[in-house]
Image (tube, rainbow, N blue to C red; front, side):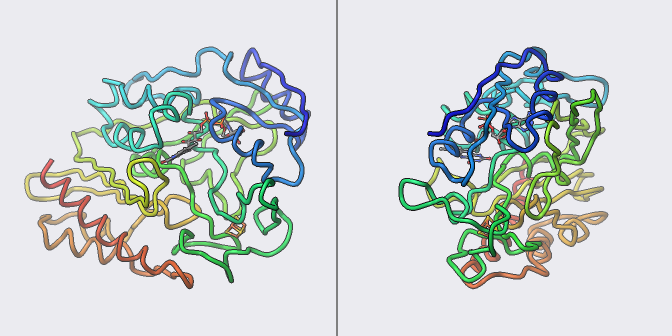
Length: 328
Ligand SMILES: Cc1cc2nc3c(=O)[nH]c(=O)nc-3n(C[C@H](O)[C@H](O)[C@H](O)COP(=O)(O)OP(=O)(O)OC[C@H]3O[C@@H](n4cnc5c(N)ncnc54)[C@H](O)[C@@H]3O)c2cc1C
Ligand code: SF4
């Protein structure tokens, strides 16, 4: 492990200021479940010179309701989402997604901000120092994407531009289906808001040095909606999604007023399956409609050499998620 300066920030503003001063050479540490692995494996050629610990920042771990919104602090743990009565009653999709993350240990330490901002799991990007890494690639600003000609079985089938690593966050998929936004704090006391899916650019996050997630705001549906999160993994139950789906249906008897269908594990950002939503919106929904939504969800997929199998999984998961919303 390389040496670095470690500072415990007393406030979000202080953390932003410290990270801004450090330019790109500082990193925030929340639960540390991703960051410490990244540091120990030495996956980057240069380690950070400054680590700013966020754990002592108060007021950022709450889950509360304000009017038509649920506000979730960036330091709220995944375990706290999993056991939240408020979320269970208002946004059950989020509880299911939080529960689907890793192990109880990871959920106990891992935070919402860290889950959304964790580094990608592409095995070229993560090649550890102790077995000959790190290796450079486009995402690291050092060479071409190695997955294009290499083993891309876990990479994206939609929307890769340069980098084909998939967004690893289960929460991002559920939050996108719920229409959530993240509130981002900047070093000069500024605040800005982006939709969760817009946090992810093709090769990076849309965060400047010194910017940190402060909280996530999720609109509470005006009417009760049917919500389902499903995830296909290689190693149940402790694994990242090969493909996941978050579905939220606003039902009206047999009909469907509105639908949000979002796929995970298929793209560098949560992938809105807009054509599937179109199939579901405004008509009656039954098993046949669910199957058509599954077909529509994968229209336009562009598999790489080794990952066409993801298309069949995505189609089936969407169909099953819609059917689960019918049964709920
Ligand atoms: C064994 C294992 C299994 C896992 N399985 C899954 C899974 O199935 N699904 C899934 O979604 N995830 C999975 N994960 C990832 C896990 O969810 C994340 O490691 C965790 O949520 C990160 O939270 P943290 O607070 O520990 O982040 P940290 O490790 O502290 O930080 C992660 C990154 O986010 C940045 N960061 C932290 N907080 C903020 C903030 N407020 N604003 C901006 N940047 C910030 C840090 O600088 C760092 O780059 C798994 C991890 C492990 C180790
Ligand atoms: S998919 Fe992205 S992270 Fe993986 S090798 Fe290519 S550029 Fe790097």
